[in-house]
Every structure is written in C-alpha cells, then in structure tokens.
Length: 139
Image (cartoon, rainbow, N blue to C red):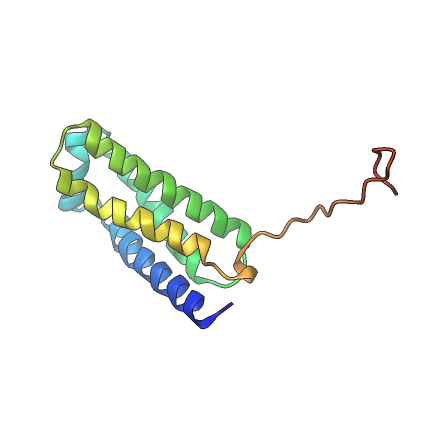
C-alpha cells in the first residue's frame, strides 16, 4: 500500500469515526439534537437506540486490527444508515442542508472502504480449481 493510499484510508476512516461515534452516543442517550432530527422524519424514538448502538460498535470495529468480516458489515451498515438518512430527509421535504452531513459521511465511507489495506479486506477462502478442457473441474 502506498503512502498516499494509507493517508487517504486513515484520514477518511478517522473522519467516519469522528462522525459516527459521537452521533451514535447521542442517539443511544436520546440527546435533544438526535430527537429533533428524527421526529420530523416520522421514525419512532426507539430506533435511535438501535442505530446508535450499531454506530458505536461499527466505529470500534473500523479502528481495531483484524476482523475483516466485521469491518465489511460495519461499512455496509454505515452505508445503509447514511444513504437511508439522505433519502429520508429528501422524502420528508426537509431543508436540503440536512442531507449535507450524511452525504459527506457516505462519501467518506466509500473512500475508506475502497482504500482499506489488504489485511482489512476479506480474502476468498474458496480458491478456484483449474477447469479441464472437458469443462469439469480437475481434482
């Protein structure tokens, strides 16, 4: 991994965690700002505890070494949460400035995922066996 790619990866990952961790904690504890964000969208308040818990756990997983499968799940969960936030704010006809933060986080999630080091990626366990000319896998 080149120095440039490491810088891109770690910068985007740290920025994701700085966005997700405090946000997740605010959601777990039902901070006023998190309630003010979710009420106009029509979601029940208990959803904050669920999403907040996953944001905190996902933030931890992104920072610790190893566990590539959990990292994939964290990236996927963050992607779904932030894309859902963008579309929820658009669908509820709220002010467009409310989609800025989740849109930036969405971009950072894709950036971090794309530039992650090899040891943080899932490596396929199933290695393909060569196919013979008859079309059958050779043993």
